[in-house]
Image (cartoon, rainbow, N blue to C red):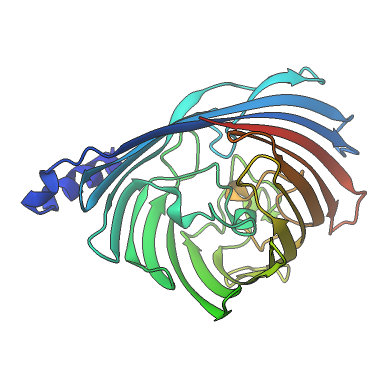
Length: 351
């Protein structure tokens, strides 16, 4: 209810000219079929799963300065970091199914200024393979943000509420970020980004979905005030685009020494036309209270307290169909444990 009131107030505050509609609406969607194989699982035998994710979205202009975005997807709304429907599970585990609206926003954008109210993915690492470590991009909570964005730089800030999903967390989070990009030469680009995620007090909180953060008598030991700078250098080798990145996270409010994470990697190639190829490799080391585990990535078998590698290759089969094969390996830090592997084969269709 809170987020719909915010949307209504934004509409009331807009100048009269904002009610002039512009016939520019874009309906699109995608489907992802995934085969997944987990091996060396400490909790039990290996597992194979077949999973499907469907999404459909509508984005359009209510006026020259006002954009509306809506998206619905598969996934249990009680578990917002999962957008999949499982049609195969070798262990016969029961997985719930649902369909929900995971994006609904209004964006007021006169010039370089932006004011966004609703569920918008803009501030949650949607375009960064490293940002997903801190925040799973399948989860888009409601809130509001404002800021300035140009091609070279951006400054933004906002607040989001994590209690909107059923059975989720009675918390809010304040987010601020900034970025700057420049081209040292015609074929190179250097990008610097920094973000801050300030969660409401969590020390002493008992979580229904703790995925590895330190606890005392079942309650979290740390608060989470996270800062995460990153640096990306992009260039080309012949006709092949290449990027290398460094990413760091520090929890400024941790109550234990294990309070940081870092990642590094590279990507080469791009998928634009049929026949194109791309590939990537990333290393990440994530200490126990470096991240707030309930909203962290779920690609690896572990969310925190691990060291991991991931690598993959993608191929554009047709204009709208692509495939990706990738592997993820995660090894617990404390106490040390065996390496857990996850193999994935994805097929993507855009429509």
